[in-house]
Figure 1 (cartoon, rainbow, N blue to C red):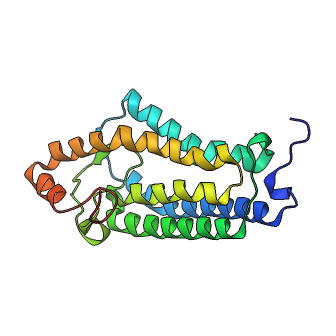
Figure 2: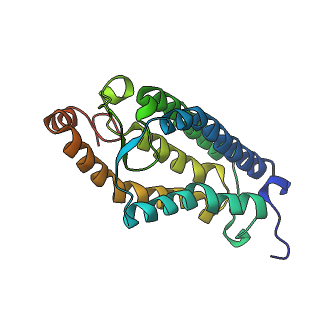
Length: 206
């Protein structure tokens, strides 16, 4: 660990800026989730599917979007995988993270107490199809993908930057099918009709 220095104190303006903006994004995301998390906890969970696969995917996502980049931001490890930062890259990363945070806000507002961080259905759970959900079935995942894509632009380290894509990508591909099966079992034809007129994460594409 000798010779390591946190990017926050590296002396390189754009490396420091990217690291600071990433930290600000994490804090903003946590603040956005605080009230929805409190609301959802008041509504009892009636159905859950927290399988070993689900737990593994949660660990991978948390590591990729939080733990691995935080280790680099605050310790500088692994410095061997650092690369030059550039103002254009940081600007793109900031824009992606800003859109991600806005989408988190809109999605939480639409879901209300129906939101859960895992594969859960709550008491009197209803199928949300209005607002952002009128076109996308999983806008929360869209927001996480934008966050994951923002990381390599903001963080001037190959491992810290791309950890989010690997980590959240693992969660997405392990969970999305299971989540849709759970919703179909609960809502039946109503959910199948909803799937027929919407896309998963990108309007008109996926």
